[in-house]
Image 1 (cartoon, rainbow, N blue to C red):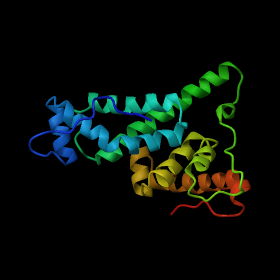
Image 2 (image 1 turned 30 degrees about the horizontal axis):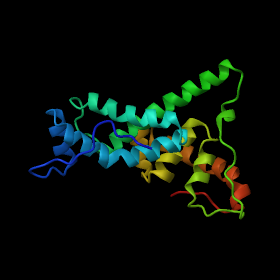
Image 3 (image 1 turned 135 degrees about the vertical axis):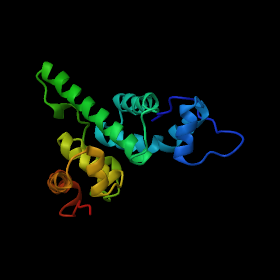
Image 4 (image 1 turned 180 degrees about the vertical axis):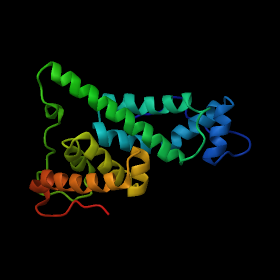
Length: 202
């Protein structure tokens, strides 16, 4: 999945390493500095978007749009949260918008949102290890968006519950409640593959 929206080249001369320096340089029109930011965070954005939407053309579009939105907002970005958190918030919001569009499209043709889910991944040898992210992503896509978002942020992206609340801009208690319910739902979905093994995050 290629989320690069500008040519990926390294800056020359004095090394620019911190996000703050790169953002300042990008604000001044340094395309190489912005390319470095894309290079630095494209994998994280891709993981978030694919976790929400699956590995599809829409995920590519949302990934690119995440960085386009960030580029347009460079002047207003103040660094109140880390750049990783800021980009993840954009990616999550755009993914949720895409899920809403999918739901509307499906409703026009009297289809269920679950019709867009892929076939169950081929396990062949029985239960796969829990680290098999492809199977986990398949299970995540069967969850409602609000439950999917908290698990993507915690399970795939590794954010703390506090950071998840900050990204989603909801109270911590809401995140904890959604996380508990999402874990139960995902456990039920994946039970045929893992038996009674737990899918909990802490």
